[in-house]
Length: 324
Ligand SMILES: Nc1ncnc2c1ncn2[C@@H]1O[C@H](COP(=O)(O)OP(=O)(O)OP(=O)(O)O)[C@@H](O)[C@H]1O
Ligand SMILES: [Mg+2]
Image (cartoon, rainbow, N blue to C red; front, top):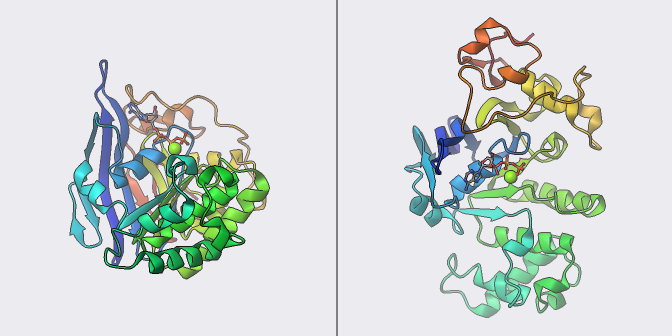
C-alpha cells in the first residue's frame, strides 16, 4: 500500500516454554493505511490479541517476536518490545476489552484523563488539560461530563467506563488506535451505544484504527477493510464489503456462516452451520494449508502451503482453489 501507516510482513510470535515451541503467529501480514480502519477477525485463539499486544510491546517476557519487515509511520522497527513500548501511549493507544484493567481505582476519572495527556502536552496547564478532558468526555457521549470528571471508576457502569477508555485513548491524539474486543464485556444495548461512539469517532478522527473482534458484523459496521486470521495465519484480507459479500477463503465462508448476530442480513447463504474440528495446537502446526484439517474443499494439493492469491477486488487469500 502506497500510504500505509503500518506495514508488517511475516510477523512471528512464539513461546518456547518447557515442551515444544508454540508458534502463535506464523508469518502474519498486517497493513493499515493512514486514516483507515481495519478489522481483525478470527475464532478465539487465532492470535488476534497477540497481534495487538505485539504492536503495543505488551507481550509476555518469554514471547519471541520477529518480523521480516515492519514499518510504523515511515520508520523501520525491529518489533523489539522496548521499541514498540516507546510508541505506546504517544503514537499508538489502546482500548481494552475490560476498561477496569486500564483505569486506576484510586484516582478520579478526571485526574486520569489529565495524567494521560502529560506526555503529549508536557507544558500545558492542568486547567487546560482538565477542560480538554471534559470536552472529550462529553464528545464520547458522557452526560454531565463536568460532574463525572470528579468521580471514581467504580462509580461508572461498564458502558460508561468504556466511554472513559475511548476518551482516554483519543486524548493523546494517537496515529493508531487499537481496540481489542471493545464491546464484548457489554450488554447488547450498551454495545450498540459504544459502537455508535466508535462510529462517530471514525468520521472525526484522523487516526488509523485496528479493531479486533470475532464479530464480522461489528467489523462491517466500523471498518474499511478486514484481515481474517486462522491459527496465527492471515488466510484472507481485503475491503470489508467484498470479503463479506464474496468471501474467497473457505475459512472466511465458514466463519460468516457461523456468525449469529443482528447483522445476519450481510451473510451469504452457506451450508456450513458450524466449523467441525478444532484449531490446531500451536505446538503442533500441520505442514501445508493450516485450515486443511477442517476444510470442506480440501484436496491433495493442500498438503503444500497454499499461495497468496490476489483478486481484482483487492482481496488476497491463501488457498489452492481458485475462488469463483
Ligand atoms: N504467554 C503465553 N504463552 C503461551 N501461549 C500463549 C501465551 N499467551 C497467549 N498464548 C496462546 O496464543 C494463542 C492466541 O491467543 P490470543 O489471545 O492472541 O487469541 P485471540 O484470537 O485474541 O482469542 P480471543 O478471541 O479468545 O481473545 C492461544 O492459543 C493462547 O493460548
Ligand atoms: Mg483476544
